[in-house]
Image 1: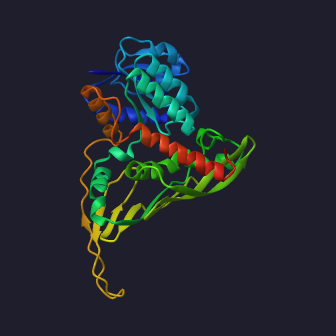
Image 2: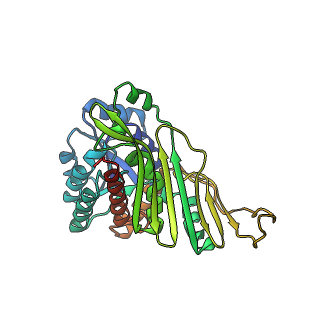
Length: 336
């Protein structure tokens, strides 16, 4: 059994708990929130949680000798301090995306994990989805690769509030914004597949709030030498397109980069000056038989049981590179 503590009792923790509860190795034994009432309310929403300790101090929870691991589901600006405190106390840490608010913070977190010999992993659900794994496995079928495009756009219910001067945490200048909050769903999988680009060019739409500018929409072009990658993201419009990688030997198409449900491969047809038949698509995806958050907890539990301190899929380097790219995109648009 892996004894887990949850820091944060908001919506994301509610969603994540459903996935964690599907792994029989995991037991939630402690809840930390800003108030005792909020922690009690979280437990009341999830009657599967029994006998859990309640904390209002992260430092006190981290000292709990009956905890093996901690999930951090709090605002972005808290991730660094909470993760390092828990790692220094000898706990494994699963940290919600975005990993941190900067590449430098991500490096500090990774250093703390390595110096303490503990597992630290970003809770990015996309890359553990079985259909994304199929997408990653079949990318070689399209090689040599030339283009990669991914879009993740979702109109935010908080946008109307933003226009009326109410700043939700997802639009908070300096610590959040649309790229960190939602653009990361398109960016992180790209980095997990191809690593650090040679250079990045970003064009972001900036909204001026009374607390400073924040990004609400944007696009990035990432240069990988012989392959060009582009991502688009938005919290002010929706997108009905997914992710596609194009190569000289075919195209690989994924319907939704956050939660892939369908992946298809279309082999390249012989040249026909546009007069030949359209490529035939073959479905290579599988069914998803668990809650979408289950797979990150399965990976985390597998790693703990194996004595591993880093995921090969959601590696620390992937988290660092992703935050470095976000830093550069924000810098280019005056949002440092």
